[in-house]
Length: 129
Image 1 (tube, rainbow, N blue to C red):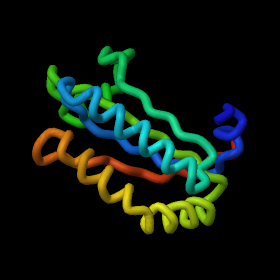
Image 2: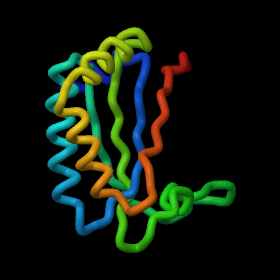
Image 3: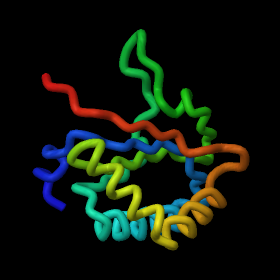
């Protein structure tokens, strides 16, 4: 997807989670499959990142790895899914809810997370700045 698609987005879902390093390849494969499914159902853009810096830049800041209690053998990942607006997001999610692959990918993902952890999710609306 082009970068312009992400700049056209008014709503973005962010999903933060810990991935044991031993599960890197399996989780990356699920992210690729999820991207394909999301694209088929009409998202504008999808990004996935892993945390690359655990330094705290200055006083008053905390590193996200410490906030989510990541261990040395885990990485912190974030996925960002871009939509035009909340209505578009609801339409896409309704299609995904009917897609059998979504449930399978969710179960596979949950099995790869550290025991007892969950995905941290939040939907954000673009600010006019």
